[in-house]
Length: 262
Image 1 (cartoon, one colour):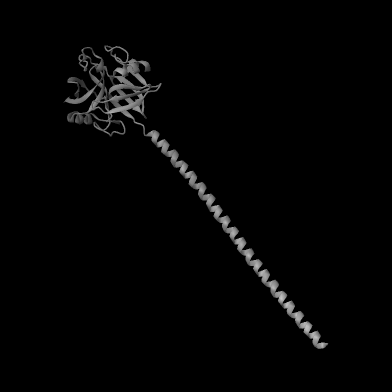
Image 2: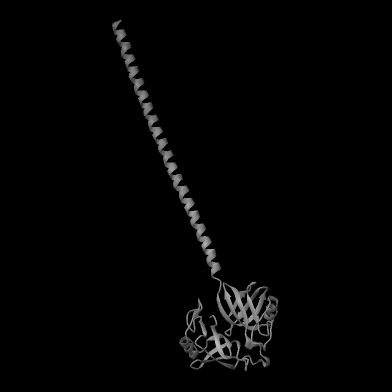
């Protein structure tokens, strides 16, 4: 009996030890699985956070660059002063072609100052230009006329008909007239005395201390902006020749000399 009891006790103890080891192993596996699960969740959350932040930043930057590019293209519209033949393209759209056959398109607006001297409107014998309408400009442009066109961002600020283009007899230089807007190639005659040549005709004029001289690359400055020039700049450019200008003259003296935009 004693031997049998001991045998039962040994078996019971062995079963208890086996059960304990089994429970310990199961708890270890649960702990490891739980750690792995939690680690994966944290990693996923971090990755998601970086993805969200990065995506938002990239989208904003791209949008800003696109908007800047559009603004840049608008500011790229032409600006400057051209002297030449104005022609009609479409309602509100015209071209001005200079002596070298270089053509520049431009638009008009309600604020465009249109002044005629016989071709657009007004009187060729008048000393002052006459305000004209858009309808008169369109009709004249379909035939063509000479003018000085001041353009800013592609839109004409002013269209001033060349007074010399309107004289009787067709000599183009308006001989005998001492006041008006005249255009042609600048020439040097003597200190303070210059000439304008066009179509084989020549007109002389003088400068004064208050004559406004504006350059656009040939008299002075560059083609990008209109630059105030000195009398010395004007004289040097006139001696070289081939400089196209528009000159506002009063009683034989230049009030303004504007270089044609090249």
